[in-house]
Length: 228
Image 1: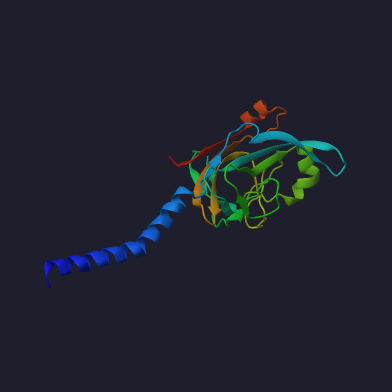
Image 2 (image 1 turned 90 degrees about the vertical axis):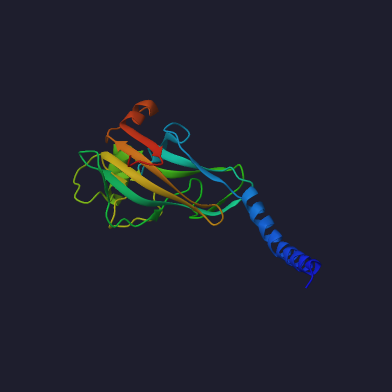
């Protein structure tokens, strides 16, 4: 075969490869350029964390503090089937060393404003997800007390930080007594991937009537690496 024949063969192979792979590459570029982009946002301040009220069985409004983070879609397309999962809890001991809560089963957390476990988040849309709440001592005693599942071995009547979870497993806690904790939260989506966040919580167990004062009794900080 002459050189020109080899040139024709390689040219044909190259064009064939382009015909096969260029549409694939174009689709990959398109997905990356127009993909959803979820971000987790948090501040220990309104509107993320604030005081509101709950109606007690006696029809009296009782104060409650809610603690939430925000999921924002800063991408170009809708993020589909998003869910937030509490994946692990660590309890800090007297030496401030985190000890994992053994055999913890991941459980879904509660989106604000909907009863759905999975939601779609449009571009430029922001949605809150509850971490937990602290209701008044009166409300906890009259309404919530029978639903508390404390850390193994704890006995006491302290005010609880109640985790807002879609399910309650009787083998693991659904509330936090005074102490220091690390929560691992996973954000999942069908088309926006997975990301992991940690929230460090320090809780005194004391109630205060104003946001500024209460946020000194319970301090929540978002961090990527809580173990260093």
